[in-house]
Length: 369
Image 1 (cartoon, helix red, strand yellow):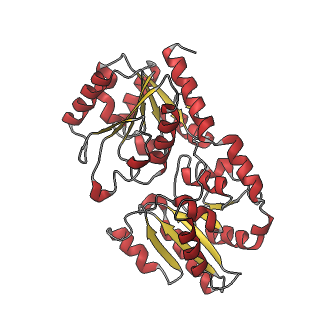
Image 2 (cartoon, rainbow, N blue to C red):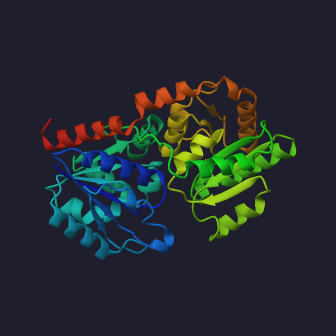
């Protein structure tokens, strides 16, 4: 089987991480040939950040596009698909790049995984087109969490999407682990100090203002909190400058990291403050590492976190709600059994389980099941 995985870029993000892990797992199968098409490849924007993690068995196709939907981009994607002749085209990006191919190259079967709320992917003319193609069985839609599925079905007024939870390869210690451990230990001023971790790009939906405000407030009240923020664009954007101005000396921006697993293994809690998500890969990394998640009630977190048992879930998105949930974490974190979190990940969210479910869908669409 020939599978084409397609995404905007390979910078540090959840959809990008899933594509790399999934592609590598599929490419390990002897009867499978995997192509990865990346639309944007600008080094200065870290759009090739994860390319080096792709298996040598994968055919990497950098398209070199700029921003904005342009007709020539649609035609180039169509021409490349005709050249490759994939059995399956698996889409992780905006659907408009596939419009030419969807209508004029029906030999491939198209699978569309939506990694966030449907409005973020299917706005404007994309919505009726996606609904039409799904009803005509030309496009198979995949939701990545139960709450994400409910939102998609309500949005498109369809009920034939598939539900496949995201998976993640278990992050282990890298060769830089000791360096990261030393950095985290240097942040702690005493054994009582707590180090929180945020893994998020600098973008408004990630809602880092909420997290920073909450950490500042609790620190003023005497809680020994420190925050490490892993992610891109905090030093070269207006929002990043605004966020850095809000911080105290207990907040540390370390930039994007390929060895993010080391930070999960060394920190006390993973803080997710997003306004919306689909199924955060970072949440799965937290479970896999035994790093206690503390989250706003976004899709994915609301599905997986059993408050007080495998993490802590805020009741809303206000500063009061997130302050309250962080206080609960501080007071009750010793009750969380990390072994339970890791077992929960291994049984439900390994990349092997995720890849097997996608492969079953691909086989069914090809009539080979």
